[in-house]
Every structure is written in C-alpha cells, then in structure tokens.
Amino acid sequence: MPVRKSILLVFCLYCFNHNAYTQYKFDKAILINNENGLPTNATGAIRKGDNGFIWIATGEGLCRFDGQYVKVYQAGSDVRHSLFETFINAILPVKNFV
Image 1 (cartoon, one colour):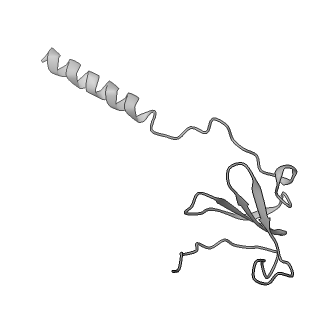
Image 2: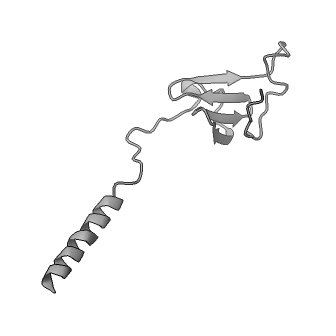
C-alpha cells in the first residue's frame, strides 16, 4: 500500500509541476503610443490578423504593427491604395480571395 501512495504522490506532483509552465510568459511588453508610430493615443478596436500583424483602429487611420514598426494607412488622393475614410471604428476579418 505505501508503494501505491508514493507512486500516486509522484504522479500528482508531476502533473501539478507540468501544468504550471503551460502559460505563455510576456517577458518584454511593448508599449505602442504616438511617440513610436501611432498617429494618436486614442485607439479603438485591436485585432490580430491571420498573418501575425496587429491591426489597430484609430481616429486618424488604420495602423498595422509588425512587432517593431507601426505602418499607418490613411485617406488620401490615391483612390486605389488609400482608405476612403480616416476615422476607423472596427476591424473585420478579411478572407483571401483568389
């Protein structure tokens, strides 16, 4: 009987120890604000795309964060490559059409 209890104890300790390390640790958080690329600190929706980019809706355009740099998309005179409106409320998923 003591052998079964020790095996059960070792098994339980292994399970508890194993589950403690399953969560992802954020070692270095990145603060994204208007000092490092955002057009404004007032943000709306934030969404992670399928390709890994973080998309941030702001009142002054749509921002794409790749982990280091922020690229801002705004309304402009180039109808083909710019947004229709600068104020962005929501970010919806996009399916790749072929």
